[in-house]
Image 1 (cartoon, rainbow, N blue to C red):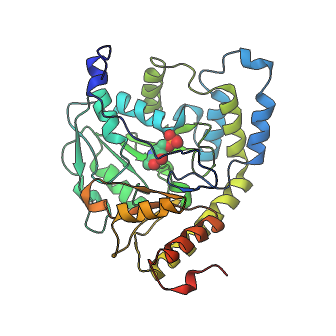
Image 2: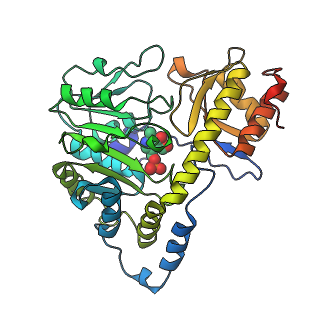
Image 3: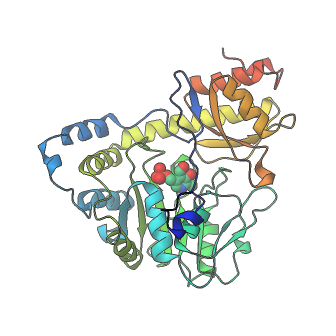
Length: 362
Ligand SMILES: Cc1ncc(COP(=O)(O)O)c(C=O)c1O
């Protein structure tokens, strides 16, 4: 605490991202990165952008990128907003669209950045308990509210909400912005983008960090009614006119246009998830149904903290959340390559978590 900090800075409890240690040979399954990386076409496009033009500011509105995103989703450029990672898009959405007299609603087990944005912008919020099976029931979101936010699939559970339920939530909340954070949607859930024409209060937020393997580039976007998007631009242009540099705009465009790479890598991750879930179940884990590039699992014989520490000793990083208490025994495990998944299973076997030899690599 420094005497130079403002009162606002003193009051903050910042979000703590998953560790990014610089340890060689680490199997990093803690931050839901994509093990296959970005499209080679995206890499080439970015390399081609490293030239003398970098002395010039980028297009502040990222029009060419917004056109590519709009075409991918069958909407218009004015339905699209882009930002420096979906974290920045979310921050602007909280500021521009969710700060009202009534509290914002979000699940009690969800992306832990949401309460941080509320604190940053002075937004009242109310956390709605998930059901005991960790599912989100839209019938629990009936109280008067200043907006509703949830990831689909949810994080860190991985559980998805069917599109019909998202629509029911929208029908019941015609006067609130409903923000669906689709960071992980490409790994098996149904996107709500198709609903934006019928529901002017719907904002869908997406990222290139996960299914496009570009966490290091920092590109996220929102799709919604033109009025919502205009509100986001007002906040963005009062904060940073140039959130995406020339390299990011070019790389994101090429990544979205390389549909073959996107499709092949996402299918590999889905297939690895199916295999990993089956193996973890055989080892006695309880695994929540996941439509994401991670699984949320616990073992009856260990606490989450114990297992995370034991795996760390084997150079395997997974994510453990000590709070809220009812998820403290779970681990969130990112789906890596099949080799990484096997390293994890072998380590669990050697630790004595299971005696089921059938999970050993063949
Ligand atoms: C649910 C959810 N939303 C948004 C983000 C932010 O992603 P990014 O800022 O990399 O686009 C994450 C990152 O892990 C996430 O889990």
